[in-house]
Every structure is written in structure tokens, then in C-alpha cells.
Length: 194
Image (cartoon, rainbow, N blue to C red; front, side, top):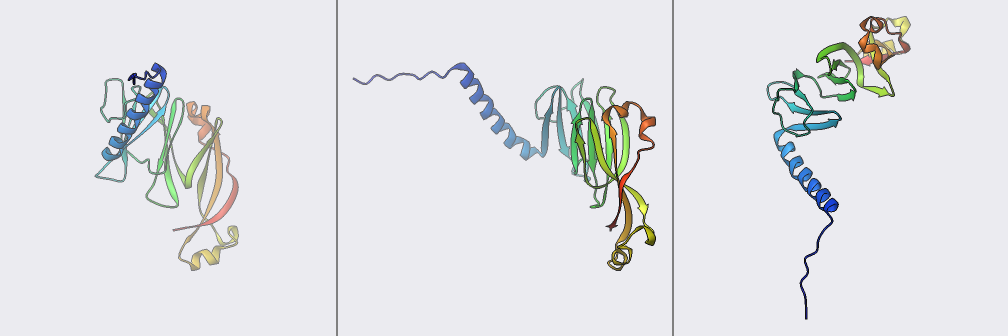
């Protein structure tokens, strides 16, 4: 005699499986809607590419639902450039982007104060945050012949010789704008820019 038995899955496994299936289903919908979602507890970011520019709209919310619906407690950043990076160090949101391969805009928002607290032009592709320190490359302007050993080669290839330097600051310095006015550059070098 064959007895059919209903197999019961423990509730934890059932819940986990449901969550996985839900994530897969939602992620397919997110890609179709052009949304990118990132969890940075207690915040949840929903980034929506704009169709009228190269920029994005960023929605900062507490509800971890990947949908671009602005709620009463949400913080919306309209038409910001995020094509290079989106980084987060509580309570700061670092956004960067550009249409140039050589330089970009770094903008930092304080999510608790709901305000832009820092804006700067950076050189290269990205910024790096290690521990509590922010690192990026800053353009110091056009190089003179005596500052750049490859000056003639760079100019002959129809590029501009530019001096760049590495700069860094502590995340907590964002609360003290006067500390960010004079960052000490290091590792100065000459590079070719378009």
C-alpha cells in the first residue's frame, strides 16, 4: 500500500524560500523599470535613470521596497549625476558622475540634515572610502613644461598636460566645512587629459 504524505517544510526554510522567490521576481521588475536599488540600513536607495538627461533621480527612504514612490518621510534628490559611483557612510551619501573620462563631480549629502554638505570636482574614475577616510584625485590645473617630463609628447598627441594630486579627508570633517577648504595634495603627477 502506498501512502501519500504531505512533506512539511520547516517555517524558516519556507520563509527563506519565499524571500528568495520574491527577490527574483522583484529584481526582474526592477530591471524593466530602470531602477537600481541598494540597501544601506537604515536607508534604502532607489535610483531611477532619467530619460531627458544623463542624470538620475535618487530616492532615500526607510522602507526597503524597490519602487520609485515618494513617501512622506522620503528624501528625493532630483537630476543628480550617479553614473560613476554611489557610496554611503552613515549619514553621508556620496554621489559622483560625469560625461567626461577625465573629471567628475563629487557631491555629498547629509541624509539626517537633508542637505548638500560638500561638492568638488575630482579627477580620474572614482573616489575611494577606506575606514573613515575619503580619497580622491584632484586636478591642480594645466601643467607647465618644467612641471611635466612628458609635456611635449602629451601636447603632440593633442592632449592637455594636467597636474593631478591625491587628496583625502576624514568623513567627520564633512561636519566642519572649514576643514575641507584646504586639503593638502600629495603624490603630484602630470597626466594627459582630453
